[in-house]
Length: 274
Image (cartoon, rainbow, N blue to C red; front, side):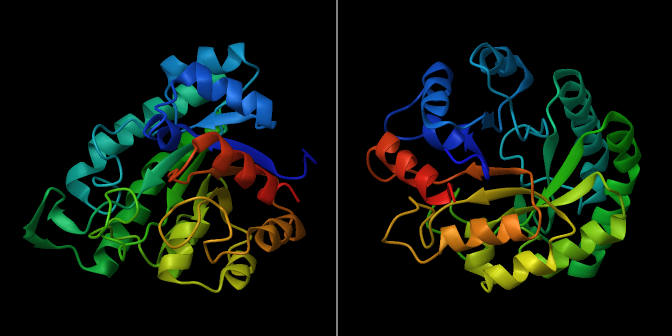
């Protein structure tokens, strides 16, 4: 690899693929391809990563189940989300893991029940700011970055291709939340797949968000598949734009394989290796 883009493998994609890679196999693949991280792993898995000379670029927030459902937009979940994120931050700090993921949450007042009524967008954003401000100071003291993810709500074909009901589906709104928190340790998780589905105009949006991008994910669009000739995003141009703005963080390969997982991953890593 050229080494200009630091690449990471997102474990769930390949663990859930038809090949059902376990952690040891995923680590061996990462080393073979020159990737330095297996992300969205948990503290009990980090010794295995370390054994292979790898790190975790982005940790889970500790929320059970679908962690993106109950987030910072809903005060009824603040205590649990903040407690679990605090635990994740402490584990990250102890292990040298740089970042932990965070979510706005679903817009329903009961995240599991759409019949419970919607939290208005402005109210949800204000709740996110208030909740993140409660934990930002701890993240600053520990030197760990909280990365708030923008997700798409348009794709309803698969539970991990889109998230109908997620409140943070507009990139500008999520960016505004991050900026309103005003902490160097609260950043935006910029996922090119989700941004393309919801907003498009990717290069310009990277430029507009350059001061708050804390982590990057990639997957082909539409469909969250491989980064190949059957999808619409020009990833080499986007990787060069990341370098142009001085981005030095990680780029996580988070696509769902539709064919041989290793062949698709080998191609995706090469495409992003500008």
